[in-house]
Amino acid sequence: MDLSCTPEEEEFRARLRAWLGEVLPTLPPAPSPDDWPGRRAHDLGWQRMLYDAGYAGVHWDASPTLRMIFLEETERAGAPYVGANFVGLLHAGPTIAAEGTAEQRARWLPPILRGEEVWCQGFSEPGAGSDLAGLRTRAWRDGDDYVVSGSKIWTSHAEVADWCELLVRTDPDAPRHRGLTWLAMPMSAAGVTVRPLRTLAGSTEFAEVFLDEVRVPVADRVGEENDGWRVTMVTLSFERGTAFAGEVVACRRVLAELARAARENGRWDDPALRRRLGRLEAEFRALWRLTQWNVSEAEASGGPPGAGGSVFKLRYSHARQELYDAAAEVLGPDCLDLDRRWVLDRLSSLSYTIAAGTSQIQRSIVAERILGLPRGR
Image 1 (cartoon, rainbow, N blue to C red):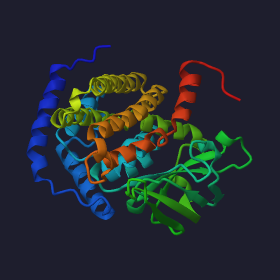
Image 2: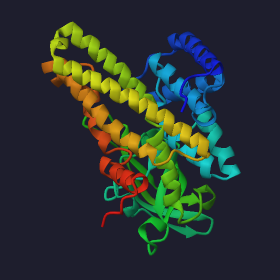
Image 3: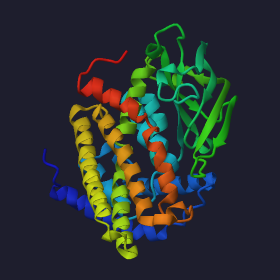
């Protein structure tokens, strides 16, 4: 596979780099981490700037190489991440584009791209995280509506979201994977209660969501009733296959900063640390190439990223944890100081082998769908 860039792609890189150089100095400072209304406004303001400049749809409409160039250049320039808009832009939007009706695509996709609406993900439940098919949030038909009752947990940005990609059980008598349905639920609907959760790192980007007979129009169902598991696998393939791509670039930047810090504080003299940082550099280079391959394969097949996304997610989760363990080694005793760089990131990295599908789940997917091993009993 030829992963080199064409002259047209290099022209795109140069144009994007020049635009970033012009607009980034004009951005207002990022708000406090706990100011979620402020962060929503900041993140959506950046998305609107991307839209006005013609870059908003790069995650959906551009070629795989252009997407990778976009992620490389925005991360290297220190541009804002998608932030509060990440579920809509990287998960729900691509799912609706792949599985939604023409009316649904026209209703939901433009506001996501223009930075007008925020989405959250209502999949995990207190008793159904890794075992997603065990969810118990119930939805039953009442005329032109579904009536939904239950609860969700670890719902990112729920307190500032307009819509929720919601997975519910519509047939309690069907086998676990066959009685689920994917709904788009307005967060302003009567009966929706949001309670923020504080993480180990002190942030509040997650929440519990309680649903008390919430009415969701049948017209807001994506895919067929009881076909939600298949639609959800489309969502998760985007989440595992491409949503972390920008973070790989960020990790490579952190790695370079760690090497500089180690040279400044004398820890570079430790050959074991140098070997560790060198191996991590090779890891993240390989992960970047794997991301390019996954996106290219999806483009060639005309569908979402496949099981290769699980290979990426599995290795990336552990590599990120190893990166911040190396950061603690560089910091020495300062790794216990929450005000020092990389310390909170290290705490956050602990969740990566759980979030977006645990490493155990990813190993099962790789074993069954790539290696062809028999399903466990």
